[in-house]
Image (cartoon, rainbow, N blue to C red; front, top):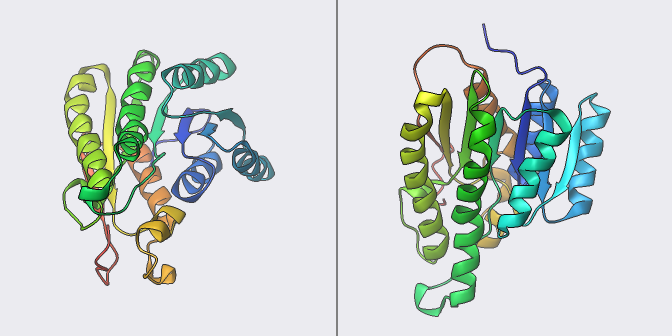
Length: 242
């Protein structure tokens, strides 16, 4: 028997497309009210419309994960609308793919700002609200590059290594508050970011975003006292891509 998520409230970043969109739709179908965060308003409005068509409830909160003020507004807007916060899914990510030697400093900084600093800021802002619930959840979407190295992915790998390390420490710090921190490390998922990193791959052979969403739902609804710290996900064919 699984735990009900009905009337819980979640923030999902990078919710306009790909993995984030699938997570938002899956949570909404489970009865979660979802704050949709990303930079592109049109994408968020499209997902909100999909959720409404399913009978769910969503709020569009345009958010630049590089901005501390925008992230603070995301949390404040969510709590003001629904009076609570139960779940945070840090999914927003950007990548720069090329030799480290030729990586521009500003691109390195942007990848680190969105992929690691942004989740840090969101977790920090959300924890006081998550602490008020019987059980709070933080799910950070990392990548298999958090534990592996791939050529021409130095900035992306560094950001995901940092996200994994932060998550491990945070899990210990908030455990006494009843907050569980999970990290998912997918291999190649059929997203625009994957296509940017590896245009040579057949996207039909990649993991579907819906499969990652199903794992998020599993983590949020499972019963018991055992805690799953991280889950690595790969295709059965073991494509050489992170």
